[in-house]
Length: 479
Image (spheres, rainbow, N blue to C red):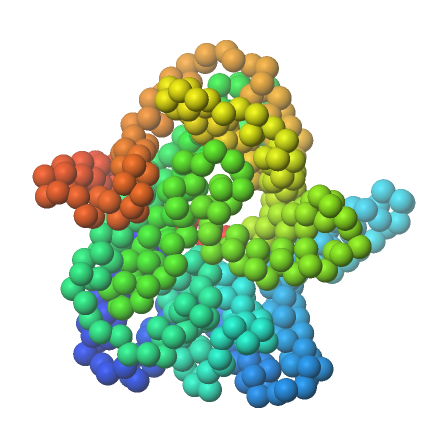
C-alpha cells in the first residue's frame, strides 16, 4: 500500500475519520490495528516478525528498567540487540554472505555448496528493527522510562506513517506522544496537508520522471560509456533519490501531523552544505544520528588503545561501512559506505590544516569561495550516488567513473537528459533556495498568499501533465 496510490487514500480517509471520533485510549488501539493492516497489505506473513521484535523489546525494556543488577541489565540488553540483529541479518544478509563465502573458498580450490534460501526481504525491517532497539538501549542508559502498556509500545514500533521507510524515531520523542493525549489542532492539520502535498509532488512528479532518465543509462552493462551521459544521468539520480526519499519523509511527517504527532525532520537541505560532515548532518538525519549515538560514540570511547586521529578514523570507517551495509546486501553499498568514511577522514585532516588558510576578506570573494565549495561538495555526493546506483557490479561502476573523467563527447542523448533534468528540478531548487535564505523549511507554507497561489498553480500544472499516478514504489522500501 503505497503513499502515492489511490489504494492508500481509500485506506487513510476512513481510518482518519474514525480516529478523530475516538478518545485517546481507543485512538492508540485503533491506530495499532490500522498500522498492522497497513503492514499486512504488503505481506501478512511478515506481521509475525514485527510482533516478535515488539514483544522481545517490550519484555527486555521492562526487565532492564526493573533491575538494579548491572549483569542482569546487560544480559537483557544483549538479548534485545542480538534478537533484532539476528532477524535483520538473516532476512537481509544471509544469501549475500553465503554466496561470498562460496566464492572465497573457490579461490582456494575448495568446492563449497552452502545453503541458499529464497528469502523475501520484509519491507521496513531495517527501520523498525533500529527503532525498537533504540528503545531498549535508551532504557538501559536510563535516558527514557520503560512503558508497561504493550499497546502503546507496539504503536511506537509500528506507527504506519513511518513504519516502512522512517524516519527512524527515538523513544524519547515518539513514545511520550503515543502515551499522552493528543488534541486536534487546525494549524497542525494544515501544515500536515502541505507536507503531504509537497511530498507527493517530489515523488510523483520529480523523482518518478527523473527515474526515466536514469534507467536507460544505468541499464547498460557493457562499456564503452559516454561520460556526459553518465554525468547528467547521475545528476538526475542524485535528485531522484533525494525527492523519492525526502518525499516519503514529508508525507510521513504530514500524516503524523494531521493525527497530532510530530515526527523528526529527516532531510534539511543537504545540497546546501560545504563539507561532508554537514552533509551527513542533513541527509537521512534519523539514520546518521542513530548510528552516531548508538555506534560511533561507543566505538570511539572503546577504542582507547588507539591514539590521536587514528581513533577517530577507525570509528568513522566502521560506522560508515555499516551505513553502507545497512542500505543493502551488495558490494556497491559497502563501497559507498567506505567512500564516505574516507571522505570524512580526509575532512578531519583538512578542516584543521587547510580550510583555515583560505579566508577571503571581500564580500565577492566569500561568495565565490562558498559557491566553489558548494559545487565541489555536490560533485562528491554525485560520485557517491554513482557507486550507490551501480547494481550491475563494481567493474561497471569503475568503467562509468573512468568515462566521467575522460569522455566529454556530446552525444544525441546528452541534451534531452540535461533539458529534462532542468525542467523537472528547477522548482525544487527554487523552493530550497527560498528555504535556505529564510532558514525555514516551512517557508513556502508561511509565504504571502500571492506566492502560495503561484506555487500551487505550478505544482498542479506539473501534477496534471507529468504526475506518475501508477504508484511507483519508493526506492528506500527495498532497504
